[in-house]
Length: 185
Image (cartoon, rainbow, N blue to C red; front, side):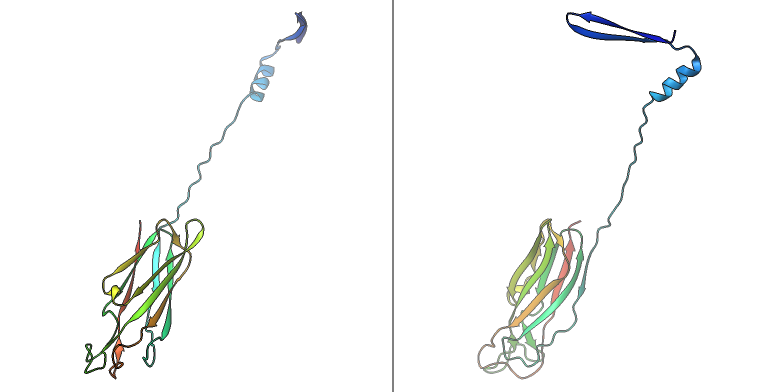
């Protein structure tokens, strides 16, 4: 007897009872394989290393200083973590090489403004922005990206201010402007 089924009727419901008789051990083993459940877990991992790099800089020449000159410096910024950008002016303005205080009615320093723009992602595109004058940058100023990361380079736009007094003393003027990048690791 290989198996049988019988129908029972209970209060209008029909139930099916099945009994399976297995006649050989090979058939039992075959049925057991069909009922086996298989599972495979795969753990997949990866890593992105933290990086925060700043490049650019060099020399900017305004040429003949009369005031209201503009110069742009591009920053190469590659930072995949949030960051701070520090800005500082060494002298508080373009300063005469020999007579920083000027002479007579002629000034020995020319102030400027700097406008900073850095595109960011957090996760939507935005722009980290700040504007400062050279006098306030004698004390380091910091712009924070918050939770954002850099979305490419940055831009510094310098604009000289009108000279004070009778104008500028003849001679060479210079300034060291420092940009510092600090990652939030």
